[in-house]
Length: 362
Ligand code: NAD
Image (cartoon, rainbow, N blue to C red; front, side, top):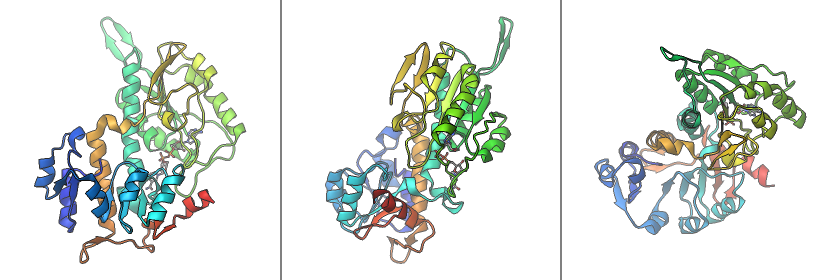
């Protein structure tokens, strides 16, 4: 959810006139009256909200019909999926909308407070462990009882970025024995500092981009990685995959033969299922069983903890607005000299201004 009563109050304090769509907070447990108490007004006239707003704060990308309603020059902030939404980006450009993509917030120290990918990945990482534990017919911690001793479950996390590190920390908190792998060797220390084992695989040249994203592996490197992970996967109770390469389809890292090597009852949670999958045979938004192994492909994981997800996303949006707010003019100022904005603005003034996205569509 893009605005909570708390961030509505902060926006009002900035000097903005805040209008909230009726029932916005219903699914998250916030009532219209809480927004009114925060100083916002409530409107059920969706069309008027689109045609009149100077700034639209949203979670999801707009539909083409919604773009048609927007005022020329208005600022639309949301997730946009700009690598895959050519028609939408073209519509926003043609309409003269300034569109800001939350996926494209540059990854600098100063922009961390606006970084929705990170805030939501943290919650998603936590949820992978919750879902894995729920589907595993065992417990995670070691348990010594008069009836016998239960061994701790083994968890293998592939991809130790924001989500993966949170998955490692969560599984450790629950008492599991955790191993992890990432192609960015720099994270080995972070994995170890959480009390997990880093699986060493020599893939030759790997590395990361200046934004901290993984560089894509060659087909040969992927094959080497698969081979080296095989034994760890076979002995794991839960395998969690969070591997992504920015702007590309996620790599397939757990193959059918690896699933066949796992013990029936074990669980694989594929966080990338919705965008193509790290696991062969995972089905987006479904839980399936292959040879007795449960594969969880459920998507939109932050939605399971929607109150916290909303609080974090709304804070990310507020921090973005506050950073470019002109208090005297009471407006959101688009400045192409700003250190963060040009990286996440996709369209402005009838042009696709974003250097990365422009290149992608050429
Ligand atoms: P991401 O979601 O793009 O990828 C998830 C993880 O998958 C990454 O750690 C990546 O290295 C890994 N991966 C890719 N291919 C893999 C493979 N074949 N096998 C195993 N793992 C693979 O990345 P993310 O989690 O959003 O962020 C990655 C890093 O970016 C962070 O760890 C951090 O260093 C940096 N970061 C910086 C900021 C900031 O400074 N504002 C904010 C967020 C993240």
